[in-house]
Image (tube, rainbow, N blue to C red; front, side, top):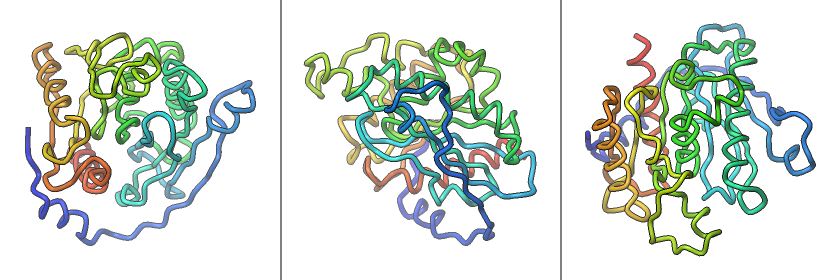
Length: 266
């Protein structure tokens, strides 16, 4: 695990970068034959440069505890010419966690079928998200049944999984439904930890400062990384952003993700 000092992260965030002109398409429906709630929530936004091709694609899942939040294409990711896809999904206050995860898988399916029209490269698909979004990324990337429904193999068709401060035990929103307190950990079929394996896609796992993170999230992810490696995963990078807590660690993490993509595509 590498600990990234806060002053370094601030330096990265402040570093000047070549200005690019991004264009936006918003509220694209990615799930067919929807009911009213699905039609409202299962939409995505795209930020891209016109007239380009072969660009990395970041499929971004927002946070919010699986019960709130808003899709978007984070501005800090609009730096290196990457195509950014911001995914909306249904919340578990209205549907099951499994249905939310199916929404995420359907969005990835839409991306794989359409993103070349926006300059994206199908060999450079990065799934990333913060908090609940990080949980979603780990679940659909490690439990292959969600993407298999759409004929997708994440081990072969995803360049990397990049969860920021995501839960890897059963998500607290699911435990709340079961009457289990937020600080009582459980592991069941809705825990990414259950699916650790050595043949998964490469992973960049980022945590906030261990002293500032939510609910022991740093230690949770450290154990996750350890179990992935013990199960034979050879391409897991674990970074801790010193000085940033759960809510604000995404900003420096965005810069670390862009650096990771640049390094992998040299």
